[in-house]
Each structure stands twice: as structure tokens, then as C-alpha cells.
Image 1: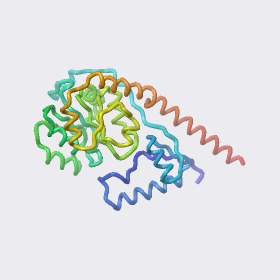
Image 2: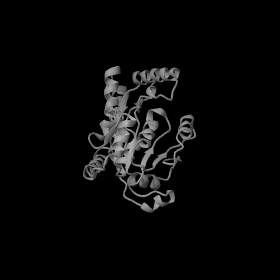
Image 3: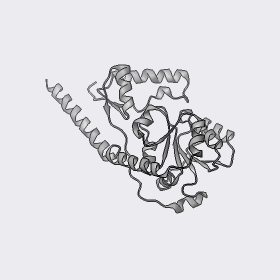
Image 4: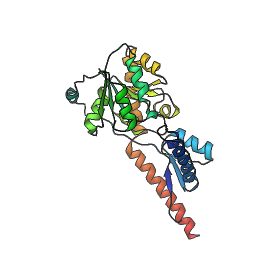
Length: 264
């Protein structure tokens, strides 16, 4: 009872389609318990802070995640996967429905442009196996899980478009990593992604949107602006030094308040 409890709410887990109705109800109940039993709440995205305030009348502190700017391009790393810079699309995600991977695949397959879609993520779960079984086209390449950070960042840096389908809330670390690697981003159109990217990305809601975006002629100057603005966001807003400083300041403030109350 004397311990300070600070909860980072992350996303809204109860919204994830991979969970059963019973599990989702439990997660919503757990969320309510976390709000009522925490001395302070942290939202890693501004819409999460808005949600906590409107749903529970509980203010929270906005502290996002961070990423490190990628400065080590090595196009030779692509050769082992028979890829060329600017001539493939990329998804890096967990294999789960709320990441809209199936929507992205369908959109790419229906496009006139026939660039490969590279999908990175552990596909040994039920949804991953479903995707692999359904989409056996040569254009769709499942690479499984990759943990080599240099390879991941080079894949991001040289892709034609980076598709980010996450929708279950919060500031997603993989999105920040794509921004930090200089990827041109096409994100699922939701308030969480827009709160991070603003006007510095393409957006999709349906597979038809994906098809249109992949067919269009690349607007190089616009994409250069997207990339430059996103790199600036990483430097000024989503960098680890700033994140750590904000956590430390919060811890010190709360401990000071607690010590003052204990002395009364």
C-alpha cells in the first residue's frame, strides 16, 4: 500500500481482435483497475491521454517512446534477399488481425505495379499460418522474424513504401523506427497513427486505398518532405534522451510529493 504505482497504459489491449470476447472483457476490467489503483498514469500517445480523460475522468502524462536515427545505409545487405533499393514494399509487424496485414497484401496484389511485398514478423502463430496458406503468390515474401537491427533498418531505409497497419492504440515503436530509418510511410488511417505522423505520410483504410497508392507515380519531392519532417520529429519529440528525462522528472516529482505527505 505504500508503494508508488505508475502505470503506462500502452494501447487499448481490449480492442485487439486476436482476443476472445471473454478476454477482451477482462482486459477492459483490468484497465479500469489500473486507472483506479495508480498514483499516476502515462499515455504513450496523445489520443491515449484523451481516452483516459474522457472515459475515466483521469488525467495522464504524455510520454512517448523513442527511436534512434539510422545512419548506416548498406545496400549490399539487400542482395542476400535478392532485393533492389526502392523496388519492394515492406511490412514489419506481429501477425495479428488488427495490424491489417491481409488488407495490405490484397491491395498490393491488386495493383498494376508488380513489386514484391516483404513481410517481416514471426508467422508461426495461427494468424501467420493463415496468411501464409492463403497468399502463396511469388510476389508475397514472408521472411519470418528478423532480429538483426542493421538488416531491419536497411530494409526500412530502401523500401519503396513502408506499410504500417497497426490500429490498437498507442505510439508504436516499429513506426518510430521506420520514421528514424527514412522510410516513406503509408499508415492505417486512425487517430493514433495520425497523432504521430500528422501530414507526413500516406494513409489507407481499405485494400483499394493500398492499390491506388502503390499504382501512383512516386511524388519524390513530397516523399522527401515526409521523410525529412519525420526525422525532425524523431530528433525533437521521439528521442530516447528526452523520454528518459521525462520519466526521471516524473519519478522525482512523485517521490517528492510522497515524502512530503509521509512527513505530515
